[in-house]
Image (cartoon, rainbow, N blue to C red; front, side, top):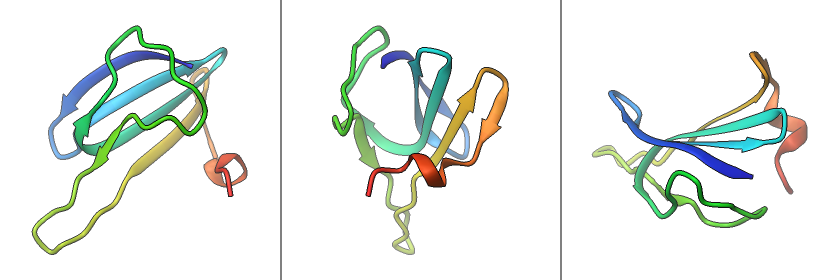
Length: 79
């Protein structure tokens, strides 16, 4: 895929959006990002570090979109 956006989102820390043809993956709640807009990424390539809060809770927010339709990511996650 290609990194189309790296930005900060209030309440979600840093976010990365990747275009995979007609699909997009969205990763939020990252404390650190190791990619930049325009970078090409490969499957399983590290794109950043998930944020850990004070409780300590570490949780990634992940979405898959096909155009403007939100998809269920369960079938897409590598095991």
